[in-house]
Image (cartoon, rainbow, N blue to C red; front, side, top):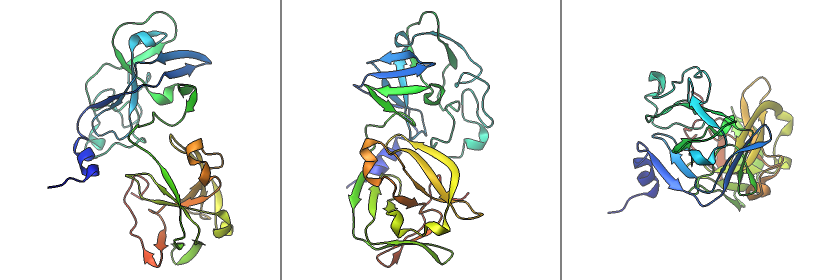
Length: 269
């Protein structure tokens, strides 16, 4: 008998999971360091695929006081201070688009007042509510890094063609393949091999903890279909300026074989 590793990990998705980390974790608010810990944990609440930092209260430079929601303010629309709202209850996975204020375990929502003392205990921190984060002396963006998550960038000579409604948007025999399980393989193509005249800059921006800040391209009058990293993080430097298309929104043909459109949080709903 054998078990696929991905299935094994997904089997534990309904559990509250944690992992100690050896890195020093710091967070800033208004230019002041308010979290400084060498005793941090990564915590995944049930259904969450991205962790949050948890640190002892003694490592938080401020007073923790009751809050209306887990993010220190009124609960966002569709979120509840504790417990998933009914409209999210049927989701098997909570991706990073689900706000921190939505919790799937019991706890007390608090906010940080950056003056005064601290108490004993463990605090889960809303990554987005702080101005800057550091792992040791390296800036951290997007969300805490998962030590079991990685990206691989591999040069390839596969022939990749990208189409939308029968129109060829890109064609290349020198793609960079970016592997980031459980996401689908992404094909990063040199801009010279992309019909840039058929794309227009989009105002959309996103942040990946492993690749950095992304900018997007859209079809004229349509939705976003591609993105690129103008200044990626060190681990993803090789894809600088290369264009990747949403496998979910275009047709990708590799060595003459059409790929099925995957179902991910970026699929059309």
